Length: 131
Image 1 (tube, rainbow, N blue to C red):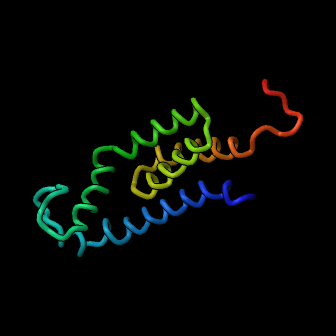
Image 2 (cartoon, rainbow, N blue to C red):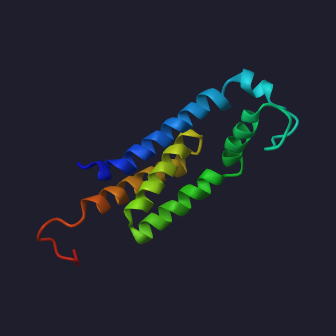
Image 3 (spheres, rainbow, N blue to C red):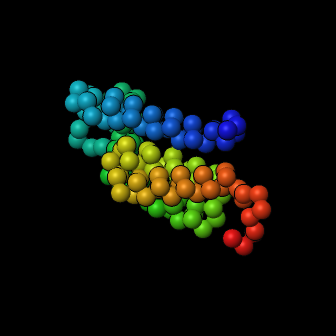
């Protein structure tokens, strides 16, 4: 495999690792939750800068942002079948599954990986365009 073919897979894996780190160090620890203002979940509240980042991540789950992004990117990848759409769908699915949107994330991972792999494989020698 060439570096160009591995790049979308590596980017998706790095985004997944970032989501895991955000979940483990920004969302789940009780001491982090207690350090942020608890009266409202806002992006511009009082507290350290990372409270706004934490609030934004939590809002993607609370407002079903990752659900909608997973479904929209999955549909787009199925309709247009482009490698970049497959990679985007795979990355969104990985982040979604790490950040508590399991069903839509699993669907997006499956569709994204299949579309990306199929787009990267191209047509086999001798395969007709109608197959």
